[in-house]
Length: 66
Image 1 (cartoon, rainbow, N blue to C red):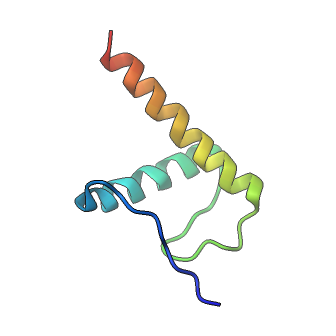
Image 2 (cartoon, one colour):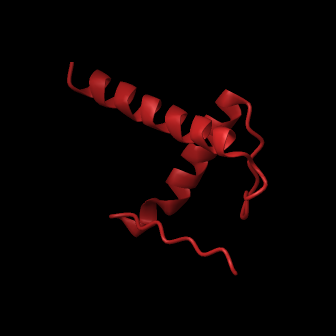
Image 3 (cartoon, rainbow, N blue to C red):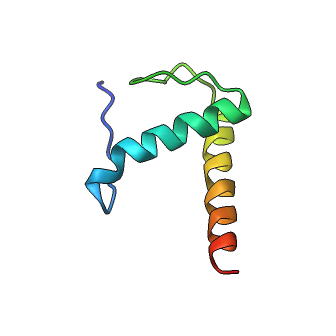
């Protein structure tokens, strides 16, 4: 079974920025992500990265509406 990325961005040109954002968030929570396949991290680590991404996006939105 091959790993296939089915995530679609509304703006395909944003892929590189989203990858950088994901790496920044991973560093903030102490998860060592690498380019490409990261199937060796735990679900807890992946959830920590995703949670940090959501937290930062919400904070950014809140600052923009003030």
